[in-house]
Length: 349
Image (cartoon, rainbow, N blue to C red; front, side, top):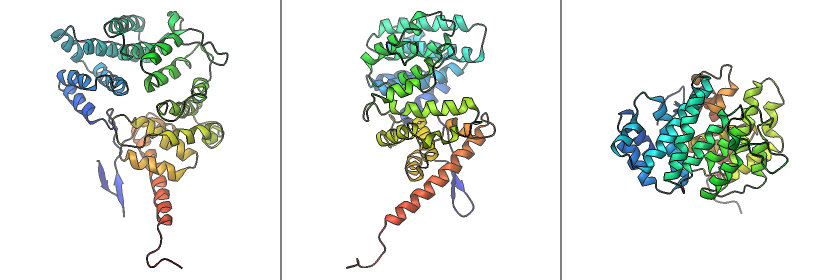
């Protein structure tokens, strides 16, 4: 843990790492940085059909691979051309590169998207029971703002929901119900330009049927949608600063907290816990937010904290906001615990 000494108390340096609580994933990322692909192969093999871990691990690995000039996954496929996991990872990496090009509005975006789609479909043919190739294909939906691919613009079948990749959503659900990443990719797809949908429409629909337990990760979606609304407004509307303290969002925040997995575990998303701690603080549930911060310890994500600063592009400002809110909430939680402790001495008659 990264810690230093503050004035009169212990201070902490927030640390961001894409692996979060997942130690084996952290090791595989270090192997990738050294241009070694065996660690990726061995990790995915060990993950097996744990779809939650396979989805999160492959996404983080692909994002890291797409940022490097070394074609680590390509080297893997060169040595093991029949590796199913290798082809799945290749699709993941191409999707990440296409998404990066889309965000930067590069001239070759359409070609990269087409290549990524073909790779996803090829990986799906090799591993038809694996939800990851379909989730990767779903992620490309945000790039289709010109109605090029009909499978990204299907009618939802419900009047209140916008068009989107509903067929892919159903196919993923058959293979991996309650998929966290699928939920987030759908949220992005149904709020892209052209849908005319509010950012919280899909999230509100999910909370209408999601229940604590396996649905817990999906119950976090309203928290992300609320932050997205606040971010795109630029913090100008004072009412949006109070949205977390009013129903229905406050009710959604409390449901997310009640169903959250507050453990240091590879299956637990550090991003989700950062959003949850932020939402509990904004809802003035400081003691409960303190409990989330206690689990997070030094683990920090730039969003949502950056959107409450004067310059969201500055990681240092986001980290400072994280520490500020963390200090308030942990202090409140400590005081609440102290009040619950009976005074020393014999019990009163």
